[in-house]
Length: 318
Image (spheres, rainbow, N blue to C red):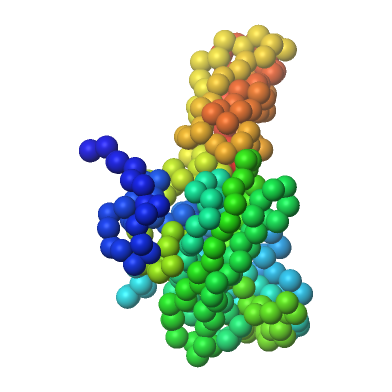
């Protein structure tokens, strides 16, 4: 059955209607808010990270002034989704946070609107909270938080919500910021080693009230993630993406094939080729990369029948 797009402009915030649930086909404007998709690998053991690192899909790890470990949390009894944990490993004035950058047209296309962030958070710090940032340059309208709900710091899971408004309109693509931050004011608080937060069921939706978390199917969530990042194949072993056999190679000649991405990407991606093996064909390299696919070239090392295999990542994150 086809999905019908409904106009929600005139529906009050507190109205319970199908139109409040169907917004461009999905309620939650965040992608992978359940932290289930992790194309880059598994991170179930606590480990350190570099500032600005993407791990689970669409979520960027940030730290300021302190070192920290991260951990991908798998569902346990009573939990409906995966989660993510950040824990400080040093003491200083600073912040540790997760951020998801959004394509601004997805937020601003209706002009002035009200949105609500919600997440289930566990923390031992009363500085844990939800925040929303917006771009202020290039004609984009800044986001201001109408309300912030911070954690009590008692170590239990609490549902946090924060409502904010957008104004104006935009004409091109940019990035906004959404995340959980341990800083509650313009000046960073002192974070103690061992301060942490865990986050589950992170959602952003239109309206001034938080509703239940939208659980999308894994294939749907993966497809949304692959607009920004694609990984095909494994680092080791025989889980190759492509097995090009029967190449009638000519020494010094070039063999190429076209690779189509699983979905149209946000922009022409940065491609990395890895875990390659070949016979008579050289290591393939990506050329002519676009939003829908790429061409791979391989220079033949000798004449005769040969092959090459490869895996790849394509990165078009904001």
